Amino acid sequence: MYQKITIVGNLGRDPEMRYTPSGQAVTNINVATNRRWTTNDGERAEETTWFRVSVWGSQGEAVNQWLRQGSRVLVEGRLRPDPETGSPRIWTRQDGTPGASFEITARRVVFLSSKAEDEAYQAKSGDSGGPAPVQEDEIPF
Image 1 (cartoon, rainbow, N blue to C red):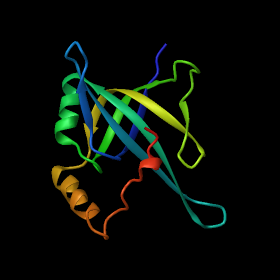
Image 2 (spheres, helix red, strand yellow):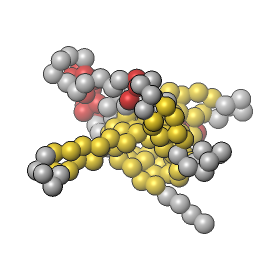
Image 3 (tube, rainbow, N blue to C red):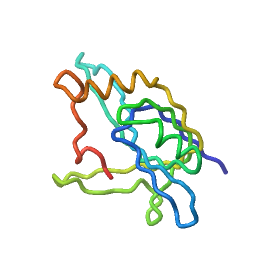
Image 4 (cartoon, helix red, strand yellow):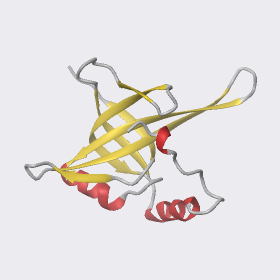
């Protein structure tokens, strides 16, 4: 049996790296993927799906060193289901609405944005002309 998921998106916050007791590096990133389309009524619609990604070893160290909030990445890996249900982890937002967490163990992470693009994003997100900052209740973890 084999499964593989590939996503392309942007980091919702800076990477968080830690080490296991055995000394293995693991970096967690939150990746948002966006889908835009035009409805039958001619209106534009958008959907954002969040993924929590774990990146292990030297690849995790590189992700922590080089990526920042807003960086564009391609992630290949496998979905990690909730051990109790075998489905995505279901949770409740602060406003009481349900949400789901899709978790991926990365096999490969490809950096798609240049350092200059990442720096430009960081500069824009600090003023009112840039994208709105990610709200904590929008990220399910």
